[in-house]
Amino acid sequence: MVDRIHELLDRWLQEAPDRPFIHLPNRTLSYSDLGRLVDALEAELRSQQVRPGDRVLVVAENCPEHAALLLATSRVGAWACGVNARMAPGEVRAFADKADARIIYFTDRVSKAAAAHGERFGVTPSCVPGLAHSAVFANARPEPEPMGNPVAAIIFTSGTTGAPKGVMMSHRGVAHFARVSAQSRQLGPQDKVYAFVPMTHIFGLGTVLLASLHAGAALEMRSQFEPADLIDALAHHGITQLQGPPTLFARLLQYCEQQGISRPAAPQLRYLYTGAGPLDLVLKQKVEALFGQTLHHGYAMSEYAGSLHLTRLEEARSDTSAGYCIEGAELKIVDPNTGAALPCGERGEIWVRGTGLMPGYFRDAEATATALRDGGWYATGDLGELHADGALFVVGRLKEMIIRSGFNVYPSEVEHALHSFPGIQRAAVVGQKEADGNEAVIAFIVQDTAHPPDADALQAHLREHLAPYKRPARIIAIDDLPVNANGKVMKRELQARLESS
Image 1 (cartoon, rainbow, N blue to C red):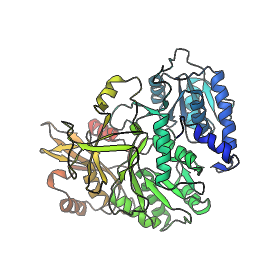
Image 2 (image 1 turned 30 degrees about the vertical axis):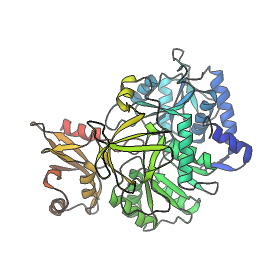
Image 3 (image 1 turned 90 degrees about the vertical axis):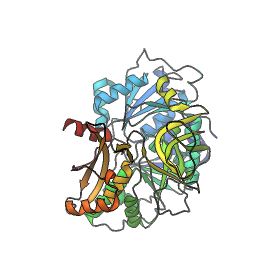
Image 4 (image 1 turned 45 degrees about the horizontal axis):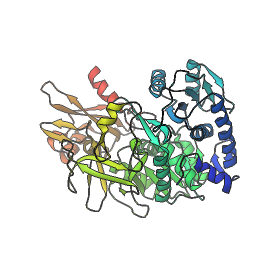
């Protein structure tokens, strides 16, 4: 077990310095190439008086320079704080303030959005081409011991249902997950991973970058997701593993349908995985039919530095289970009101603890105290149930659960009924408060423009599959669902549309 995440690279600098690691459309970097970038950035951070316990904000889209900066920050003992460059200017400024950043870097070569943010802050070029950095913020306070040393990074939560928080991730936790993640899918030097998931998110940072670095696997790195590029990479660049959120696979299915692709050429692909969002059974079935192999799934969160449950490589499940508990993690289902453990098969709130659990939210004692409970448990706010074989099923969020006529309505159940009807490509369900305190079930759908759903037939379908209290009071067709940079549906925005109308 490594003590700090940059040691994952140090191993390969000793054992296989010339092995290719990051493949781009126009160049390839070996481990030694990446090591030289890390050396240069480490020296630059020290010259800018970046100290142990300082925060280095990185406004980025995926590129080798971003990966090098993450590792150089680890060497210095500072904390990398990733922000997706496609966020709004006010959001980036808020994250800089929340992190109390010592310095801000921008991946301006691969990202026009990052370059524009840099112009607003005022930047100078880095010693590494492809990066620019702000001046040092002299008033930033380094985090003292004992917290300063163990923390590797801050990951900002997506804020799909509330204000984002800064999750402190430990070197020990994220390095442990890199090892477990690599082992769970038998990742090794023979593999090449399609790496488009943002490294500003735990999915891209832990599951893709650090797990690949642990295993010696190569990355086919992209700053953004383009279905045509993925189809080409699968056919011609030896991709063996593809991971992404459900929205990625929904976009890929739509593209393949538009292009008349019934089975993409993917001669070396052996592992498909989706996470960072609920998995709909219809989507799973369509992806598995497209590729002719299992779509694996898991349950993960920033607060645990990655996944706690994963489906097994050798098992092809026909349901949407998030799989089984992995090494170092514990999970239980509790009554959300009392915290009492519930038996197998009963739905309740998911509580977790283990090696990857965060120390807390950065400089937010109130949010930390609310989330962390006695015994080292973290109350996730997710709803789920455990089956007798240990398989976990995640059914929704406590905050998203709709109370209709005294009954609980889980949006995922309604969304599944909608997804299973022809002509509906994607759906999201939210609750709308009514004058009597009840909640109406409201569905937003993205239609197949060539074959939109028949309204009468859809209502008959919903009557067949949903109890009366679960059926949407309104079904609203929109051009696309709002998603954040990590591919998660922003239900706050959908609710805001209802309030404004």
